[in-house]
Image 1 (cartoon, helix red, strand yellow):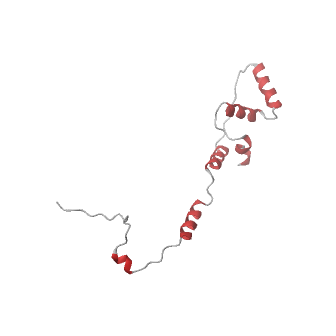
Image 2 (tube, helix red, strand yellow):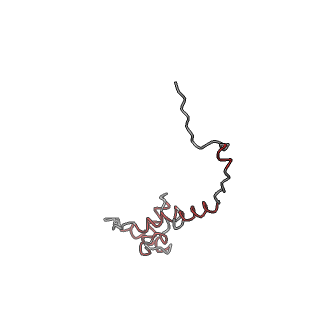
Image 3 (tube, rainbow, N blue to C red):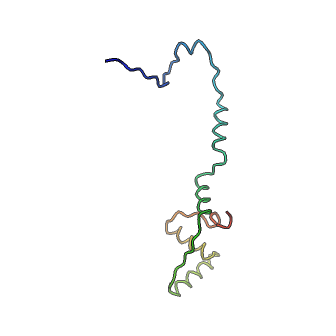
Length: 111
């Protein structure tokens, strides 16, 4: 059976032919500049997530037939904390364990 030779370019020693012709190495600044160009303008993952939430389509969300004492307690607590009803609702979701950015960061009016 014959042998198959595959050159993957992983040799640690250079072949004799390449030693005869010295080649100037590429400057690492070229690679750095190319990587910087590719990465420019890309937000961090957390900023990309905030932007995605901020620019997501909106949908009305209401809770019908809530007991009046619960609704009033919710409004009083939101006022006490200096929050709007929406801000306080998101605060409650965050305290319940959901990973939701702060309201100022996802305000849809700042698209």
